[in-house]
Structures are given as structure tokens and as C-alpha cells.
Length: 150
Image (cartoon, rainbow, N blue to C red; front, side):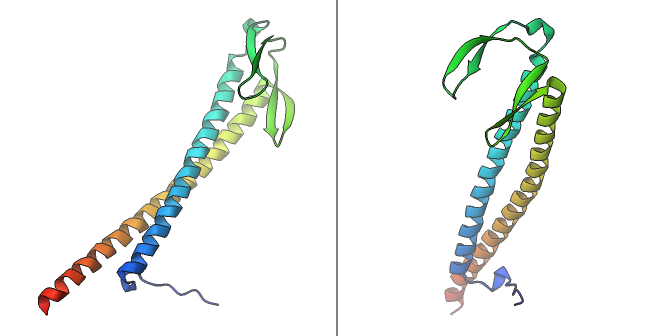
């Protein structure tokens, strides 16, 4: 079945309001997704920074080790040349510092590509919403001028 395209100028104000509402909902969802991706990217970059801080000079340094998101226990750094990396879905892998940095850089770059794509989508949706608002304003002005002509 072929898709039919409808010009927004052919819609009545109520239909335009529905289109605007749908665009606003999509924009909210996309904006929330953008924020979540930004947080993930910041986490990956933070991991890279943390790995860079591991040097031979930090061997035996006392640190707090997270057991849960709110429970930490004291510990000492024993091996600063290897780290444990969360690779997702509850799996952890031992990697060298260089391998871990490469892993997190790859993830951060992937997220950046998604952010770039999402940013373009958000901009298009915002332009579409603005067009709908302009047509709604035009239609309302036309409705207000019609009684004056009669």
C-alpha cells in the first residue's frame, strides 16, 4: 500500500494541534535519550580518566572499592597494570590499562556517533514543530479575519 503524504496546510487547527502534540512527545523522548547518552559518554570518559590515574606510583594506595552504588569498603591497589572492565550484562573482563582505555574510547566514540545522529533528528523534529506552529497561527489568523469580511 502506498503512503499518502498530507500537506500540513491541508489540516484543520485541531488536526494541527494533534500533530504538534505528537511532535512534542517525540521531542521529549529524543531529548531524554540524548541526555542518557550524554551521561553514558561521561561515564566512559570518567573510566578512561580513572585508568590514566593508575601509575606505578599509585601501587598500594588506599582506595574505596564500591560493592554497591552506596556501599564502599577500603582496599589497596595491588596491580595497577591490569583492571577489571564491565563489558555489559554482568560480565567483567581483566584487561591491561591500554586495552581498557581502548575499550572505553571505542564506546565513547560509538556514543558520540549516536549523539550526532540524534542531534540531527532532534533539530529536524524542532523544525517540523515550528512549521506546524506557523501554519496553526496562519489558520487562526484566517479564522479571525473571516467574520470581519462577512
